Length: 294
Image 1 (cartoon, rainbow, N blue to C red):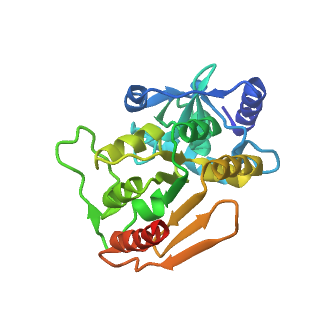
Image 2 (tube, helix red, strand yellow):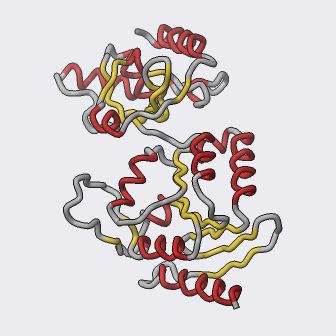
């Protein structure tokens, strides 16, 4: 299929499924065992720039991938060697919607490749956030960025994964994070984690189970969507504001305590490279909570 033929195919796919796609949760077993899918089962995401008029595919990127794929095929090598699988979300009525990897999908099609490696993820939607909020009676929450705070450590200090885990996770949690999560739960805070990456909700839950801690809110993949859809961002903010009278935001250098329904907040600087980073946070919040009770 030439590029002109692919563009006709893309247009027909978008028209065929416009207003029909419904995201559904894939089972943990399906996420683990499904490693590839025919290109015909992989559907373009109409909200992705790849599919938007006047933005559309980058033919330079598409051509680059296609040349690499064809060269690999001519040598009898798997064209997707050294390539990350496409990140996809299961949808009804059929197949998977592409979250990340449209150009590789397109290059595979124009190169005559049928089966394409995929990774199925269950990202967060508004309905998931509504369920998370209904599930709790707490009126306070704390938020952490998974990528920059929970999984990130410039000095290499990590909390080791307990031995004997059946699932090995490549991510390693920063030293002190499990104790910090326990601290917030003991003080009646819901713990929420955010990521702009396309982690499955189930994946994050199981990862933290390895550290014997729970998370109450998991928001994945939505940062990209919210950047393009202000209505989604406003709806999420409204849901959260109705539920929580206080939010504590923790990053590497600062802990900020925000009071719902007002513009009041407290902020405290942290030594991000300090070995007792988590202890600093517990001391700051512990003293504030104690003073309020007295």
